[in-house]
Length: 113
Length: 109
Image 1 (cartoon, chains in turn blue, green):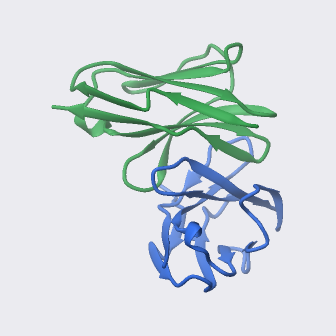
Image 2 (cartoon, chains in turn green, blue):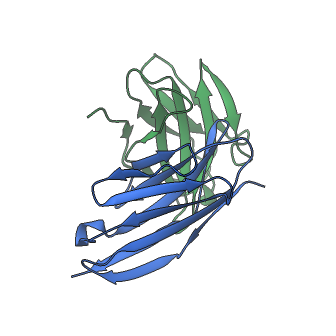
């Protein structure tokens, strides 16, 4: 069964450093998303991406965050200057159509120290 | 503000019992209601509901949407220890999913 692949599975970074989280969505999917889950809290929407541009973003997704689809297969989330409160599990998801169910990747656990 | 509320937050039952998990939502431009199972990491897709009153079934799991009451239930019959997980409800509005806080289900042998 097709999968959404995320790397790395765990990343530890120092406060203030830049991180890039990588995702390979399912190949025929057109809609891409990032969500995050702070330990013990709800899964929260960050951003949706379609046709090489952001289609919607949440209040969390401020100027420190950016997304990119650099080569037609990868979908990345960059956090420019990490803060302690960015520590969370980050999930990438993709969908064939905006009205279809999403497939989630296994997540990247980001720990900011 | 968009909101999804699940109840109960936690449920402990014995193997073989039947459980009902509840979800209510208030989401702008509502399109569908999704249920996911989260065991260790990634949420895995269970159901997507778009029409009111039509039950979807997959084995021992079933779910139904009530658009008038803005709610959905997930039923699991003849529970097994492998059903132990967090069950997430999410309402799809426009380009995003709004998640509930989840119901932690524990099945004791």
